[in-house]
Length: 161
Length: 161
Length: 161
Image 1 (cartoon, rainbow over the protein chains, first blue to last red):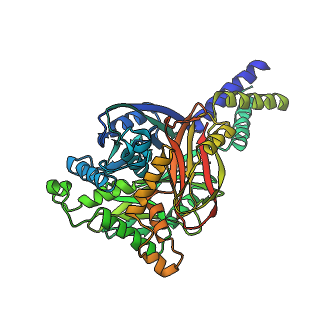
Image 2: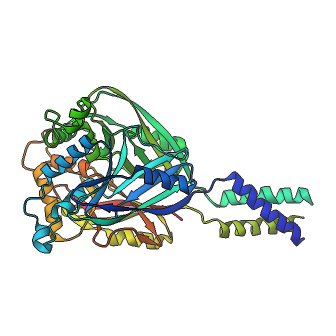
Image 3: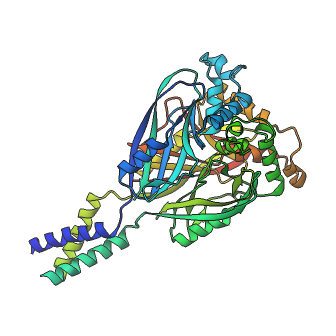
């Protein structure tokens, strides 16, 4: 009877796999060369590419900065709006004042840490029909608040089906 | 032998489906008529309804604004706290000053973009036993920072089992 | 024929379970005794433990504050940076002024609500190879902005495989 059982097994697996769409996790990354001092990068296309390459139809993409001096959000990627956003951080968390972090480490990026903590290191965006659900005038930005050029690697993780 | 194989297939599938609880993705939306100028809406009930309708027991719900002039957070939905939150945005990102975005586009919503970028477009909340894990005095709010009434559509995506 | 079908069923299930890695949801919590007034706790180890205990290899962990007077972010957990972050909140959302929330409820934590709403109640972090994808100098912090000591319970939910 074993050949029949063999057939039963493989057919059953095929039936199941074509009936149920299995969820999965895919972890990838984005590499960026940044200049620091609130250098802003539009990373929308790289995230869209990660979704496209994954083959997943719908789910969430989480973008994460493994860094305490940079952060993520969305904005209309237009030079005026970017400069307005930089002005906010210059005003509420200026670089030219004393920071307890600087007194201890003398690396001059105390303001970068506070700015990054406020804006936040993580962004989760749903996708559906293979597309990010962003608005027409909305882009995903990575803001490097550190005070020197750096090579950055962001985590991009997709969970979906 | 084919009838037996047929039985084997379908019984195997049933056994598996009753053994393993499959994860899934469900994408839906919330429609809102907003007034702009930091108009705040409590969307907690609509999110709870989406969970209820999904049939899912536990997982995460991601609410996302496909917009660069509105944002999400949680607060105690009480008129005093809402007015205190509005005052913060009026003070750190006032509407009555120059914005580079406005000089370019003349749509008068430069402050709306900066406020939305700071507060953030995305909120992820776990649910368990079919319920949002919110605190007793905590509601999910959508804040429309734009300067005119709008019809808004928020993305609500559930991943769970 | 029933014994053969029985074998087919169970072998098929085993085959499938060793072929497909099933995604799952695990919900747990972190308990904290906090002092209030921007009391900051490093909860990185507790989150790493939750991942370790779950047995999951990769996915996301969502940490959520079921509270409207506390919030989450990441920072370099170093006393200087923490004190710089507290100064920001003291400056833009000071405790020693009038709040509409306080006039109504007289609980004196109007500033706590506004601070928590700004910083946000939720944080989603990818993990891979059983590890959080945090940077070397980056820790997950819970900030209790309320004005008195409290027993807090944070939701920690993992989705992964």
